[in-house]
Length: 154
Image (cartoon, rainbow, N blue to C red; front, side, top):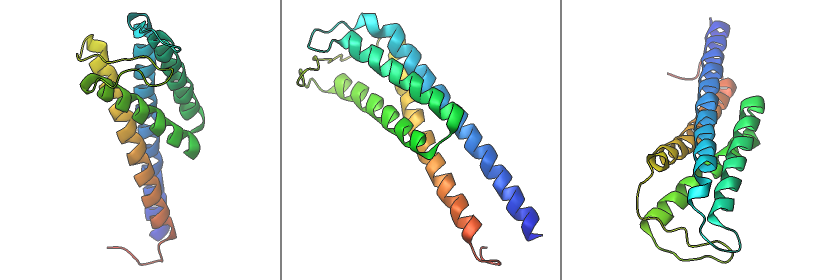
């Protein structure tokens, strides 16, 4: 009975991990598409222009999404978290705070939620952060269950 329960738990964990991976990849894909699509709308001048920043973010999100889809590697999950968190943090910072230019980065302040794709991308980036955190929690929980002494639990 224990072997069946363990196999069933592992199978559910694998399916849950796969679902979280697909959802995280979708969020990164949405972020990549929106940034690449909107890059030309943000030509803020600077050593690095707004367009260049959007192009870089779109390319990075696409590359990390592809790596996550193909490998599911723990380190790629961590990079996915960083990409999602950095993108989400940037959009929220520049939406609500006029920080001005930061070194070679232009002043990207935009106090609106327009165009609509900006909201979609923000939600997708927040979802990437959430899915990566959930994946880590599931991974750690599965590790504890796998190493629990026989008969331990509820």
